[in-house]
Image 1: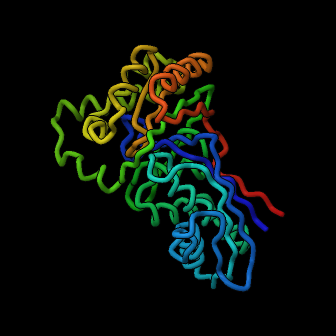
Image 2: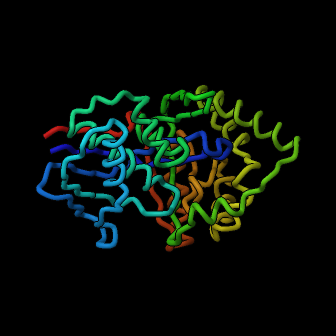
Length: 290
């Protein structure tokens, strides 16, 4: 039997639309074992089909290396909410790839794993941190995908999860098709300063540069609680962004006491919001044998 522990992720990280993602220490446990027929258990009945994303990633990985897939029993143990901007689909994709690799002894390289994941997901900002952990930036260059991993340092995230979904497809529909030159300049400068602030652990600077022009101003309108949670983040002086396409929002700090205080404030004013303080997951998905 093979077990894959796959972390949640927070994609875009404000200024890194479709190219920057952060792994969080909230993991799904997905097990694989050879079986007489393909079987999915552990998740709601409507997902226990051959269209299950873990199964599809498992089969796609076999197809990628031209290996005949073996029947497998996949059991999914996860409490990470679906369609909330915490990388639930990327967890499934990464687990299916790593499960196939380990169960069938495929010996995929890291580059191959990421290549398969991106073929399924379409972009790397969720799957790359799920695979490798930490804060990861990716860029398409010619026919290669370049990636750099930044260490977790002491950063932590308070994720605020509304009880409603935001469809990624709907969230993409509201995005602008053009940007002003001044907005592009601001976006690039903020992205460059973001890297410095993260590596040098300058929380005040990180807060200032978490100002996006590509997606967040438009997706904010899809999240009823956005303005109130952003106001709390501003009040306490912590970096803030929409996680993925939402509806989850992330508040970032190195001060655990501050995040715990903010969590108490949010929960006391809105019982419909789930809050969790999470460490950055620096190791990415893990494979356990036996």
